[in-house]
Amino acid sequence: MIATILKTRIQNAIMKKISYFFAGLFFAGLFFLASCGNPSEQNQTLVKPGITKVDWGQADGKKVELFTLTNGKGTQIKISNYGGIVTSFIVPDKQGHRSSIVVGFDSLSGYLAKPPYFGALIGRYGNRIGDAKFTLDGKRYTLAANNGKNALHGGLKGFDKVVWDASIINDSLPSLKLGYLSKDGEEGYPGNLKVTVQYTLSNDDELKITYDAVTDKATPVNLTNHSYFNLTGDVGNTILGHTLMINADHYTPVDTTLIPTGEIRSVTGTPFDFTSPKQIGRDIDSVKGGYDHNWVLNRRDGSLQEVAVLSDSISGRSLEVYTTEPGLQFYTGNFLDGKLINHDGKPIKQHSALCMETQHFPDSPNKPDFPSTILKPGEKYHSETVYKLIVNK
Image 1 (cartoon, one colour):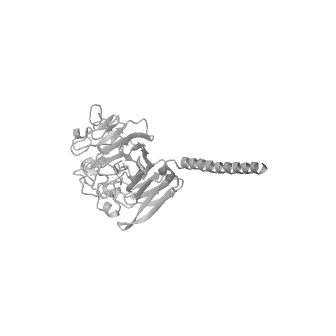
Image 2 (cartoon, helix red, strand yellow; image 1 turned 45 degrees about the vertical axis):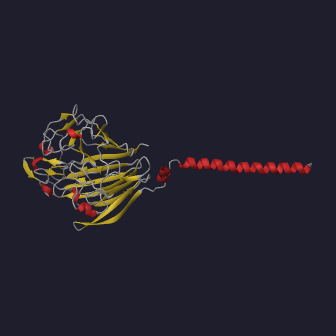
Image 3 (cartoon, helix red, strand yellow; image 1 turned 90 degrees about the horizontal axis):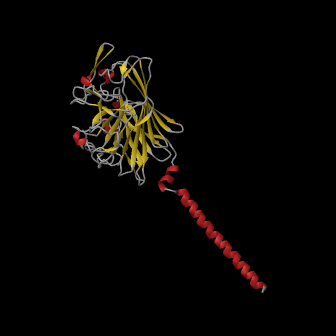
């Protein structure tokens, strides 16, 4: 009898331990799955943010380097000190697949061949100046005419074609600081202009670009970045299916050479109305040559504010644009002709990428009614732009 009772108790104890063991395995499994969450999100937490660099060749007898900025999510942006060029912006889509949302090349040689400003810093004056001339303080200045009779993006050798001094700022967020001295008379512009541009990649997938400059003579200054975006990550897809919102009730009409006429016109009832999100391809055929115009942003003040949102349903990616600038040049890659090959091996064709260049208005030195772009000695030029990526699952 006693033996039977002992046997039963032993069996019950063993069964209880077995049940505890399997219960422990079950709850451990639940905890593991909960901690994993989305596999791509789990991987992101394991990435250590920072900057690396590699030698990338030479230009003008100077060393060129390629810097890779990585944030805690694993998002990577590659930037060269040649032209301050953003060569790639690698982010996941809604499926977790990573690809670059900007057009670019894997080698320096592609940029030395002078493509149409892919990813580059633009200066001393972004966009066009009519007849390549302007008058300042009673003196007439003549610039290089590199776009028909007009000056475009700083001239024959603008900021996009020089080697910048680079320094790494690797504090809580990876930042790359670039510096350049544009000497008095360079490309016809007056004054020694000392420029600093800083790229910062946040853990919220924000690329922040900060521009600062000082001069010893009055001079026009209009700095921007000329990245070409395709949110699908594949230039085999056009950007005509992208949806765009621009917070602007007005734009600046242009003449046949894309110089503003001086008028500030309402977008209401025109193909230029992007005040509500609209597919880019919807009205583009109504705009001769495609969109390549300046929008007059609805600004409250000079603070950083959201001015545009670009979205793509294929990838689930959206790009929010914030800036302190008064204008946005929206360009739909009208002059791309398939002769250049993207880093994914595909030809870069018409409408396979677009630009959203934050800026002051084109030809402002010749348009006294436009916001002034003149920087004077003792003043400080400061501008900020943020491109923030969001992935909609």
